[in-house]
Length: 337
Ligand code: PEP
Ligand code: MN
Image 1 (cartoon, rainbow, N blue to C red):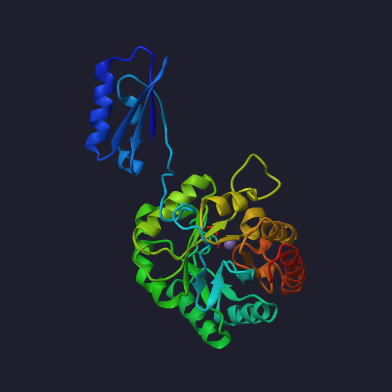
Image 2 (cartoon, rainbow, N blue to C red):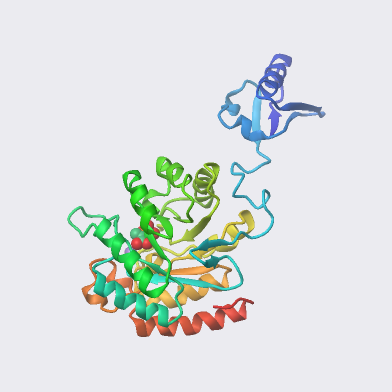
């Protein structure tokens, strides 16, 4: 961290700053220029994280050098991480497609959808048993019953399953049945929940909050990693903008930006990003072209009757068309699908 002192600062201000830097275990390095005095704090500047450095007397500007996240950063680990869901590697050369209904609605319909997506090339099954709904009167999910259906369909199809955990209370339950735990957009900054899943020995799909910056997403990933679980897959699922034509706006920039900042794999969710099934394929393709490692997509055999997110769910036929185009784009960017 670099501190630029105000012109006219006193020697006392300078000494005070040096003392504070030393107190937290960093080494101050003073450089006196003609117009400005600059002090560098040498060492891990995260030690200054809780210090309100800008309030110190005589300070004009504070310039951080290191990123506030560590374990998830590219500086910490240069090579791309590969995170396995069951035996499916996310982050390798192959683009993985995680597909399934928004919510687990029943065993028969789940089995039917799973069979379709598997036959068409999906390698992981998704489905929510605990649903974060805007209205308390909307379907809230089947809970443990839904988790049991997911586990049963995994046994039948061999597809590993991903499902959302909303509440710390259900951590053991979700851990018991799922192959990967999804933290939804609305819980991206539920820090207690993040710490809890940081203790699991299971991959976490961390979805970007709809109003969260890329830095905030990475800080949330750091929460999980700081508890020991570095098996994290980031998910760009669209952010809130002024645009109302679509449910959210897919932040395609986030994919290459994240690739530069972190070693963690990244998937794109074109379903929640757009909210409209006809926009799912083009945005999925854009995600892959931009460097995403996978797609998380909602598929339903009868979207009209879906209990949630039917508007954005692809029918198997449309999913098949998407897969065909996903393979072509993957190949064009040096990947497979
Ligand atoms: C979901 O994946 O079903 C979901 C609720 O997504 P998000 O948390 O991104 O809204
Ligand atoms: Mn959904």
